[in-house]
Image: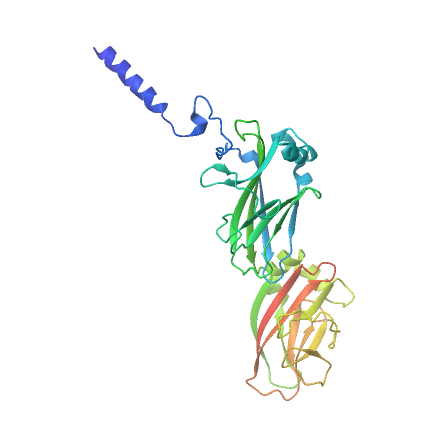
Length: 326
């Protein structure tokens, strides 16, 4: 009798084990129809993760060239980049979003040319779109962009992929996991007290903003200090006017890399209604905020300026300095 009981228990255990809801545990795989979203087969080695951070107020498109990932594409799809793109035209390859919550592909048609726009939740949407991913077949790349007025704080992860369409599943694929955000990593905020007395100044130490310099200018503080010693080098300073725009056409009017400015934050020559000056120190490790003669004690001023690469103005550090004239 015990023998039969053990056999019955074994059968029940096997029966329960066969009831898994995971498609990957199925005895025979489901063949997906044209209106179904195929299940995503887990494959971490097929995922290419990339962080894309936009600078608020200075958003410019970012590019991921597919040839930079040709090895992964060849390994996972058995195709060259050119073959993969040709496959999109003849139907052998598909290009879709991936819904990570449902662990499935999302066959929603493109809503932005050859790609998609997304809202701040990372959902495919045209209304209130804050980011987009578009495939450029000619340049063989993915172009990631955001509206110019997208505010800081946007953060999402978009997953898209190329897969072989074998009529049954999308198990051979390459996935791009794109962490898209809009922030202000290059902003350094500080305050200074400018001592009483004509032409007195207070320094802003670059050693206290190493993170911004290293991340946004791709150089060390010592390299930065060397660059800002001379106006002839690649780093320039620009005062940010009351309208929020860089005064890129203004010539330096103070010593070295520096300016005299009036109360409206306009670059002026010495004596022309000056209120303060911004002047890079001779050793390059600080910038001095100084006063014009006869400025009333207790006067306060918010001063904004940037150091940017002439060769690539998208690489810059912004300083916001609240100055109090003692």
